Image: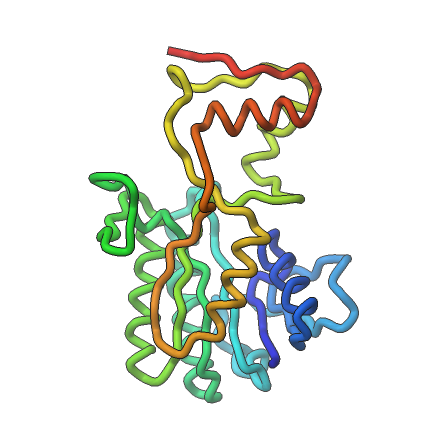
Length: 249
C-alpha cells in the first residue's frame, strides 16, 4: 500500500510516517516545510493545501490519504482556521475525486464537541463547537460527508489532546517549568478528570482505520486516565527536579 501523509513534517504526521514504514507501507509526505530527519525512502511533496494547483500531481499514485494538516488553536486566526482547515480540505477532496483516490483518513479534533452538556462524551454526543477552531474542524467533517456521496471512503478520527515523546507546542511551557523545578499550579483540588491520547496509540488507531470499508467516525482517547493533579504529579515525580503540584482557588 502507498500512503500520502499531509502535515508529514508535524509532530503527529512525522510519527505516523514512521509507523507506516514499520508496517511496510510506501509513504509520501506533503507539507510546506521539509524536516531534516525525513526518512530517505519517503517522497516529499512541498505543497500548500490552500493552493489547489499541484494537488492532483501530489496525490497521484497513492492508495490512502492520511490528512493531518491543520491550523491549530494557538494561532487564534479565524481566517487562517477556515482557509486551511476547511478550504484546504475541500481542495484535497476535489483532487482525490478527480484522480480516483478513494480512501481518506482524516484527523479531526475533539474540539468539535465544544463544552459538552454532560460527560462522558460518547458516540451519540452531538458536536456543538463554540470557538473558531472547533467550528472549522466540524465544517471540514461536513465536507467529507458531502464528498463521501461522490465516492470517497472517509474515516474521521477525533482524538483527545495528543501527548507523546517530542510533543512541544503549548506543553513546552509546562515542561520547561518542571525542568527548572518550578512548582505547578492546578485549580482548586485539581481532581477534574481529563483524557489525553498517546501519539503512538493514535497512530496505530489511524492505520487500523485505513483498513475499514465504510464511512464512519471514531472518538479516540486513552483507555486509562485520571485527574489533572494525578497526571501532573506523575510527571513531576518522573522528572525528579523537585517540582510539586499546588492548588490555586
